Length: 221
Image (cartoon, rainbow, N blue to C red; front, side):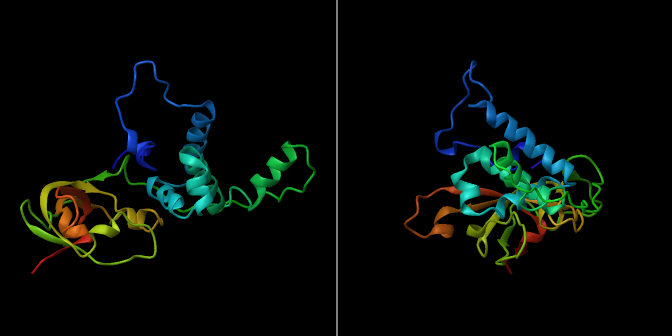
């Protein structure tokens, strides 16, 4: 929850294995540059971890899937720069065309409009004076809601009942932080769900644990 490497998941989930000692961090040199540019773009635009995740969510199919994992990061970084008017719409395409030898007009540099955002502390973990609303062993229901903006509440658990396994430390709420509406820190709960309750009686039987913020949950009674 606290690392920028978690902004877009990890490539190759279907073939995960321990890395070899001689394995390079990036498969191709351009991937390292895309990684660095994505992080730099988010910082220059005044963004945060959650605003970058929200940028990933807003990419169209071509920019999210067809361009690959690090292409996705690069596209999200560009979107963050557009959000904060660091770049003008069409500026990247125009510059690329000119670098290819074409002669096209590049849009003027806009006046930046970065969000008025200052984190209260490093990372995403925060301390709260209040006690957690739920306890280990308690049955809770994930709220059945479909917010219009960013959220870390998975759609497949909404409306389903699980059991609290662990009460985690409080963290910045992504739903508000992604839109620069405040950190709104909340406790996080590891909630265990039954696979057949989530996906029906024909699903392979296993238990799934999901980390959920306090406002995502409600009592079952």
